[in-house]
Image 1: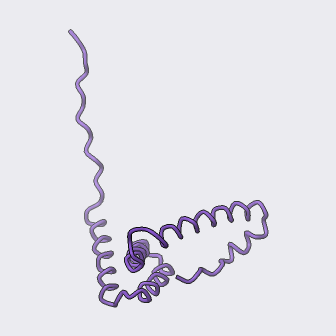
Image 2 (image 1 turned 60 degrees about the horizontal axis):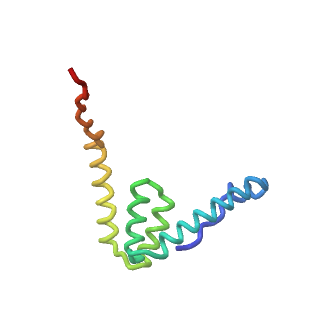
Length: 116
């Protein structure tokens, strides 16, 4: 995956030393987390790209979709696989609209322990 270009906001943050320091700490910890998720673990790289692509599609993050779509293709996902991933995402979106999450059932009321 290609490193992301530095955003204008990130460049401007460099002008404020206190903000720059906290932003760097956040960026470092995010990058550490990102690297640990995408560089290790039980899933192979192709599966990780498929999950990331599905997540980006579900969230409607077009830039992220394009990035993971390119990565998925480089890792060997074919057009049919990508189409099926997109189909699964659409089914899940429709399911969420048609069957909204239900609140868990309330626990049965307990009898009060009172005596005579």
